[in-house]
Length: 295
Image (cartoon, rainbow, N blue to C red; front, side, top):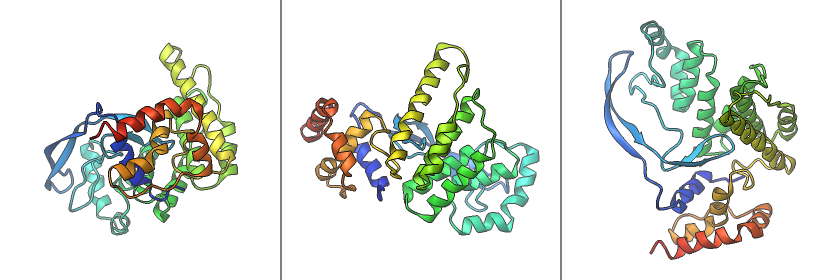
């Protein structure tokens, strides 16, 4: 388990190519649809992304998930526009004891958004819950909140019928497989993974859809390895892609170079992975940029 993965993400930012642009924000004035309160919000204008973790959280130049506005007083999360009829319902919702309890217990903004979407009867609210798992894990991957959110996400996906012709259904189940892996429920993870089917027509019949199917099929196969070795780490080095894997290999050197806290040490498997001959040239190039190009 990478006990301080949020720190490692910061190191990945430091190791990013200098050509990657930083995120930019623009201040906006937002009016809360419930109560009419006005407040300032730093709206995202641009952000760079260069990869993603197995749970789907992007890696990029800013914070993920990008946070939606949240009304300061009543705590309503503005994850989308609401209809007038919904606004009337939400006035009672944010005043309810249940919603106030979640706020008092410091549930994350996306968890509040998820519960709000459920209250409004949205069928695909589980994507908001997935974002809530990212919030919790980035703060502390070993927390009770992280465990709770992952468990709720798995339970939510299990309530949705599997559809091998629908890419969204397939991706949702793959994220649930990964959540089970992170929870240490490896047998359940492998059982769900092995049961996933991808129809030859899932997502469409054009070339882009075919490439998408192939990509997710590859991801499904990659998940088998960390499940088999019973690794609950949020970012298995053989699943996160070559660029991020090299950054992990050099994380200790990056921390020393930029005077950052030391990341978790490489595991035995990670050490062997970083020693692969296929990575040698890329690691050498990145190490040179890290040590010499940043002077």
